[in-house]
Length: 461
Ligand SMILES: [Zn+2]
Image 1: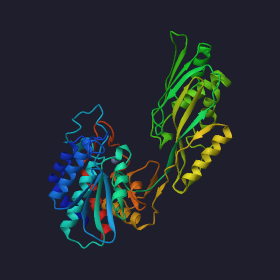
Image 2: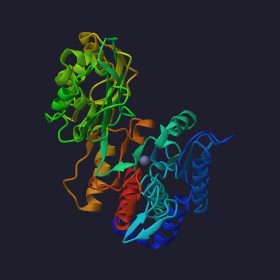
Image 3: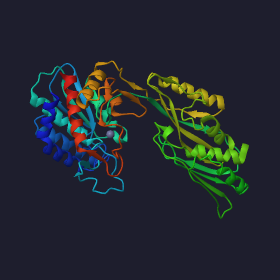
Image 4: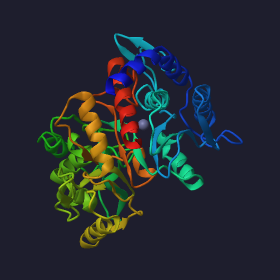
């Protein structure tokens, strides 16, 4: 069957690539509503209508869910298998060597915004449905390809879809990586507010978002600070080799810029946190006068990235809690820290938030904790996971491939409990997704097409 599907994709190859190119040509980076019936702007709605037309051209039944999402259906059954993909993209950004909205095939790679995230997968699944239909096999579950238009900006498309339609019984989203992701940690973004103090620190700022390791921290100190002592502290290696710039300004204040290394908030251990570096330098140079906030950043959070000293840490056999210190705002003697907490799949939001609140109470800090997003977890021995993992092993020949849990959230969690992430990236490679020159090797794309189609078929038959 794998060979049959592979050769069917070869037959449709050019038509499929033309369809993908047509979708890439639409700038579907979302934004504000554009009048009646375009909840995420013109681009996402255009891409959705273009995609549904392709499906209709192939003779499929389609359903446009008010331009939030679309459904392509084949077959019936009490239960249905869903594939969830999205047609919106992140903005092109700068630095492309080719036009981001013109799909180019060069040296065996497809280039263009959305080729791997996630238009390529939407087209792959559509042709997969077509090939399954061509085969004419009896299916015990119907197939539903659900495409959304707001994944990159919060997945409100899926919320709307689930509220207005009956979602599929089980399935997968090809919007992450192979072999298979059966669990995603729970998470919340919490702030810690520190009381006002009289300090020689005028202002501090670091980070743009909770879910990234800040690579820069700026500090302004008043003229009472001994600049030589500060420089001596900066030279002690607290910033792990990243630069620290200290200068006297015309108004008599002292400016310090501490650099670090950025990383995603779900893997803070890959970065070097500039807030923590700044805290180490300031505490060394100023002692008590560095204030409670900086001492907390250095002594309680430090470089652990997991909240062990703070008392919020726990782990299970699937993974460990991570705590990323993403934000710092401080002015006029008071300020706050912003943290991104990702907790193991067997934990609950209430438990994790409880540990966080206990930490705040212990240190006398006011915490602002939003309702956590609960973990998403499908057991490894479920039909869904075992079936899809076997498909991956059979198509790739990697018989020891295993499913994993991750810290990030995928589309899977938005539709139901019986959804996992399955493809399209291989081997944790960098496909420059969300970046300039996003690409997808054509041979890997064809392999992904076969895996995705086999996945649908095995779950449906
Ligand atoms: Zn995506």
